[in-house]
Image: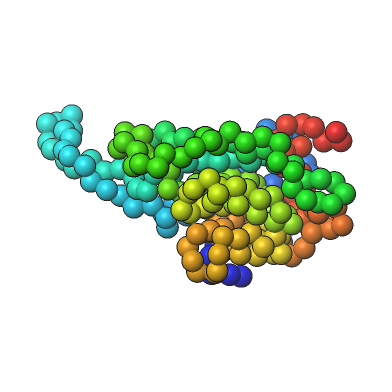
Length: 230
């Protein structure tokens, strides 16, 4: 795998991923497992990409002074509709403060398997002057999508975010195919450029003729929202 691809080896994640694969996992269990896996992958991704910065002084309940810390650089969360919504709460839980949440709606055309954008609520214009410290403009976008199958959706979303103006895109995913993950990892420049990183819970070998990961775990959006057979 390219050096900007990070596949979790956490034993608890691997066990939870096995549970998530089962056809017997209902919508409630699917939601919980997606959340818990996202917490683990998200924690690993953020630990590698965020730094702490000190600012001023604070006071404990006992009257002792301490130095407050916060995170840097400024980030935004970007779930891909629908299934990325299942990962959003996990990342919001990890972060110490609220951050902007922007949504991208992409679906895969069934015949060509090409991504089609149907919704985009990124702000139209990023300010050309530095933003205030109380509302900093995001430097890094964290793209949330549980599945990287063919990689087409991830590539389209990464392109959109880089064109919007972020310096870095972290893709956080539950499961990917080997080919799809490689394709997404190569977007945004040469390997090692630091523009794009892929953080994923597991990788399977291939996709079938319908573009579904094999063995995979089915359509996560359908499983989360009980729309199987639509």
